[in-house]
Length: 334
Image (cartoon, rainbow, N blue to C red):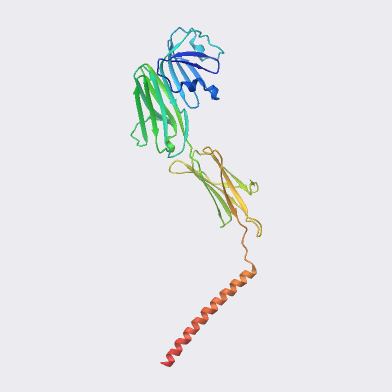
């Protein structure tokens, strides 16, 4: 199979692949036609050996090649020239590694699978590593949430890493490390955890009328809370925002408070809305609460209440008097 590749600065290569048909070849050839940006880097290694890296939004490819003809100035491959003179020259692929997806976002408690496929003649060894917060370690299946599968056929090795019940500390840079013959290739895959916030709004009357917008269990840290009053941005009241609280699972929570005046008696109710924006959301979450006018008891209602209370007291007193009088009459008769 012959695969033509190109980079934005005009370099054209012809690669001879004595391999089975590649599942991504058609997509690679027509990537620009689909409006996707293609990045290609070519670096000389030693002698007539070169490494090419091709990156698309959905797949990353590393190719270890050997030139079948002498290239006079191999360093020119890394320079931004319009045309590199390589007429009639070809490169033979010794090892090809594809990984996908290069970048992935997922939410907590879900599952993800990362893929690393290798094509080549020599024996292949694949291992998975996680780099996070400046330190890294090799992954194995001691963790019941992790499954590493590897299938080897003629000239092809397919390896996959599956992580279930994702946690915040699973976020980081995953490395598919491939060793084959004299070649060592590392493919980088990045996993970002994004957990949408859970938003609630409430109003309390005591000690002052306060509207509270709670934004709970979101990740990553940055979140924006804005307020509206009856559909318009709130300008005359400044909200008070609590400090971020880190939960036991690594997510965050924060609350925003508004001390508000209640509507005047007889006025319509006020509608307060809080909008919460977060990287995990396509559209902000909007919650609203209606604040009713203060209820003031009228004089008629107060007087009626007093009268009812007096009647109840009078009735109880008469009942007790009659009961006491009946007992005295009973004693006289005896």
